[in-house]
Every structure is written in structure tokens, then in C-alpha cells.
Image (tube, rainbow, N blue to C red; front, top):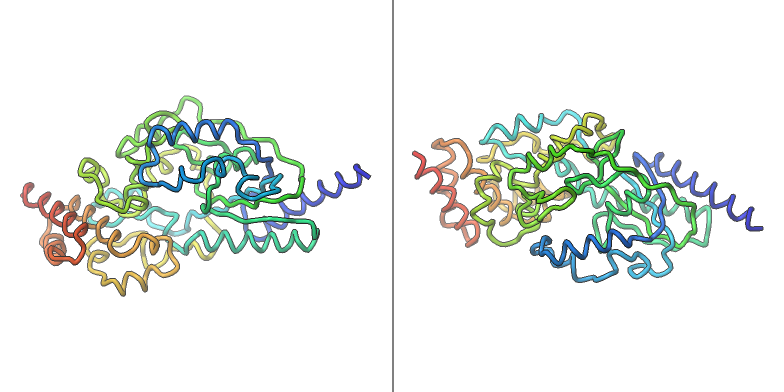
Length: 356
């Protein structure tokens, strides 16, 4: 009887991986819920204050590191990855080195990944449910207190790089992660092994020195945190280093040698929208709130809101090449309704006035 049950679970695990790839996931792995080492590392990170204003990283206690506390009866985690590198996007380094263009992290050029990954995960769960009525589950993608990278590493999808993102030996790091917490006692996959070796390219290139040690990021210094998670004013000490990165930062991935193996996405929803791969700062800064909402509808960028969008672009304009167009764009928002926008505009104008 036990052998029959074991064989059925082995077959179900194989089916789940096959179904997942049919749905478009690049890879599917399965792991247990033991995250003792990751729990210790996460708690140490929180105690250092490296999470900044991301209070949600601390408030859930051990629910983040003990899946069965978050979702009772969880025995296994099905971890998936989905490539997002958009085809035909403007070369990232070319955009970064054109200071009057807006650089947007490549994961945000298309449709909001939360919706895309979650929908595919739900479809996968529906298929599993059709095969077994005993399944209890909950799906996640960068949502709720989940240690995505640690779980994906245990599930064999890659290893946690020195920049703390997941790296796959054959596919680089340009992919999203998602999870299914389930009560099914599926066979687990072996964890991935680490292959960063002596490389420290990501530490060296970080514009704000946010990777304070291998495998440790101080989010308070990270441009992705500063332009997305931080809701208050961007600290002046980081504004010059941000350059033209108005939403996120990809430098540590762009420099990673493993990304020579990265594949472009086959997911139509991750195609570039509205020319965001190569758009100039003045144009973005001139959008009305209605235009922002219309263009960013369905995008991850929509989540930061119009005020934060203007705040970020004001910093980019402060770092842009001096021109009448840049000055006029900034002056047009000197009396903006938002105090934060006004302060960042004033800073940006000062950069040009003091460098004339």
C-alpha cells in the first residue's frame, strides 16, 4: 500500500513539473519546509535594520520562515521560476549611460508580474486538484511573508548569489519566482549548489555600495529600495549615485557572468510597453496624473503612485545633462502640490545651477 502511495506521489510530482512547463514556467521544483539556517540569517538581517522602512519584513515573526505557521498543514512548497527578460528591449547599459533617458528595471517593462505569475500558479493548482482531491494549497508570488529565494534554492532552482538574488547555472537570474504551499507529501528535489566562487563583480559595481558583504544587502542603500519601497524623501547622499535609474536597478544582474546564459521570455505579457525601455526623462516628467495612470495601468510601476514617480524622475533630471529642456521641465513643477516632489525638484535645479 505504501509503495503504491509513494509511486503515485512520484508520478504526481513529475506531472506537476510537466504541467508547470506547459503553462510557461521555465522550471518547477519541490522542497520541504525546513528553513532553519535561512531563519537565522533573516533574523540577523532584521536586527541590523537592513530592511529599512519595509516593516512588513519583520512584523510577521516566524511565519515568514516557517511555512506551516503561515498556512497550516503545509508539508511541501512547489517553487517555480518564470523568465522575464524582454526580447528587443534597448540595451540596458546604453540607456544607463545616456543620462537624459530614464532607466527602468527590466522586470517592470511589461505587465505586472504579480498578476501573471499568480494566474499561472492558480492554473497549475487547478490541474493538481483535478488529479487529487486531497490537496490544500495557497499560492504566492512576491506576496505575503515568504522566503522565496531560500525556498527556490532548496527546491533546486538555483543558488542565492552574492547580490542575494537567485542564480541558475544554466539560465542566469532574469526570472520571477512563485510558490505553492501544499499539504501534499510530494518527493522533494535536491537543493542547488553554489557557484559564485571568488567573483565579486556585483559588489564592485553596485552604485550605492548596498551589497555590504557577500550575500548581504543593506536595503536602505539599494536603489531598488530607494525608488520603489521608500515612500519618504530619498536621502541626499544617494541621489547622485542613482543617476537615471528611476525605477529599480539592474546593475548587479547586468554584470553577473552567469547572465550570459539568460534566456528572453516567451511570455507575451512581459513584452515592452509604452517604449519604457528607452524613454527620456523630460517626457516622463511631463505626464499628468491621468496619463501616468493610463500608461502604467497593469504595470508594477503603477504601485508606487504618481507622486513617487515624479520624485524619482526629479532625481534623474538632477543628474541629467544640462539643457534648457531639463531646466524648463523642472521649473514647471517647482510649485507642485506634493512637498516631496517640490523638495526633489529644488535639489535637481540646484545641481544644474551650481554646475553651470
